[in-house]
Image 1 (cartoon, each protein chain N blue to C red):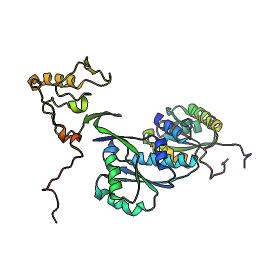
Image 2: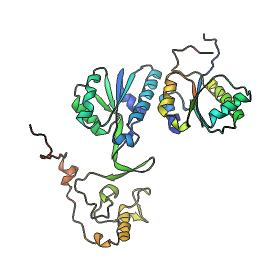
Image 3: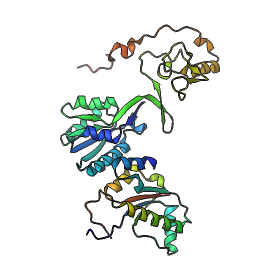
Image 4: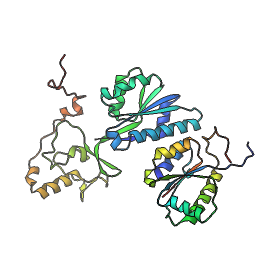
Length: 58
Length: 68
Length: 224
């Protein structure tokens, strides 16, 4: 994961775009929370600059 | 188009036994979470290759979540 | 095996310069097992180059192929057909593979994506250590199976030197003293007498000092 984040930094996409987490199957609420956090984080980072072909989906 | 607010697309690789089951449970409990996530079920997060994550970014996803 | 390490992405990008179409060629032998230039690494690098070049506004088309062994003609010959399509070839093999490609396909440019580091072994997962310098005149029978040429910083034949401190080399505290290891092994085997004989200066003419080396086996050559 560190390797991947570093590689994304070198490419110029930013290592923050990838996250790894550990959950148990009983953590439904935590899953929803994580997805919310992650969506918010990526929203702050802005769109992937490589995505020039597709207009934003909604 | 520029005034359409940015909605990120996030790809999630979820372990069948852990995070995928957790997502299932979240659904079963009717817990709300953002629809930005696209889930791919994998037998284990060890199955996920670096090249696959890069490929996802190459194709334009905004973030990747690897959940074990 | 030959151990290699991938060059930094920025250095590779500089080498590629203005190239528009690039073929990344991996090797399925040594550099695959040291995770530097096999199929997986080729896929990762190719993807990284495609993305980085797009972000830097000179998009490259990068294709991938991995051959079983880049240092043998019969494995690289089938690539010939495809090479016309590319501005440049980026090899993820060791220096031998890079040269094999340049030698076999002189009309195409093959660039090195790896640094060939040494001949060694994986000490543990993720750790490689040098074990052989290919000196051309093996003396492992005299040194309890531990090579002072590759593993002693001074390549001593009659060690240890005064820089051996509690089993550690003075050059770097992370280098074990090869002569300490040799002595301990000889003691464990009850063969201290192996080390009593003073070794004369080594004949280095079999090593690089004799110039580039070559082996000719008449018995193996195909007669025409």
